[in-house]
Amino acid sequence: MKEFLRGVMYCIGLLLLALGIILNTKTGLGVSPIISIPYCISNIFKVNLGNATLVIYILCVVGQMILRGKKFRSFDLLQIPMSIIFSQIINIFNKMITLNTDSLALKLLWLAAAILLTGIGVAISVEMRFVPNAADGFTQALSKRIRKGLGLSKNIFDISCVLITVFIGVLFAGKIVGIGLGTLAAVIGVGRSIALFNLFFKKKMVALAS
Image 1 (cartoon, rainbow, N blue to C red):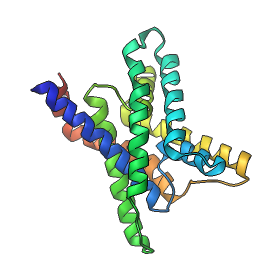
Image 2: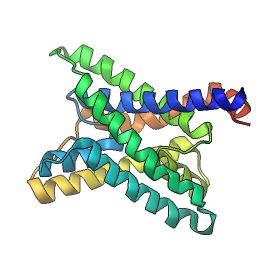
Image 3: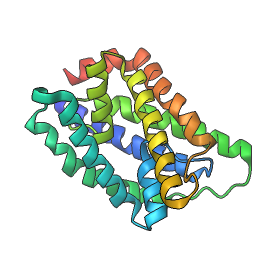
C-alpha cells in the first residue's frame, strides 16, 4: 500500500512540475528557468519544445554522472526514459493551456501559482525517491556534492540556466529569448517554495517514502 501511495504521489509531483513550468511560460512574463534553455533553442532553431527539453534533460543525466562519480547508479539511467515521458507531458500541457489576458495583475497571479506548483512538484517527486525528473536529479546531486539544502541548490541551478539561456540567445539570435520578470521571479521563488514546502511536509513525505 505504501509503495502504491509513493507512486501516486510521485506522479502527482511530476504533473504539478510540468503544469507549473508551462503556466510560467504562458504568462508571457518569461519562462521558468528549468525550461529556459530548451525554450530558447526551440524558438531560435524552430524545434519542438518537448524534444529540446529531452536533449537538455539527457545532458542533466550526464551532469549527474560527473557530480556523483562512482556513486552514480545504473538505476539512475531510468531518468532518460522518464525524461521522454516528461517531455511529452510538457508538449501536452503546452498545447492545452492558453492564458488569454492582458491584465498584468492576473498574469502575476498566474505566475505566483506557477512558481508554487513548480516548487511543490520538485519537492514531492524528489522525496518520493523514485526516478527523479532529470533536472531535479541534477539539482539533488548538486545539493549532495556541495552539502547544501535542495532549495539553495535549486537556486544555483536556475541561475545557471538563465545565464546559459542569455548566452545562447545573444550568440544565435542577437537578443535575449524567453527571459523576463517571470524567469527572475522563478529563480528566487521556486527554490524558496521547495524550502517552504519541505519545512512543513518533508517529514511526512520521508515517512511515506520509507
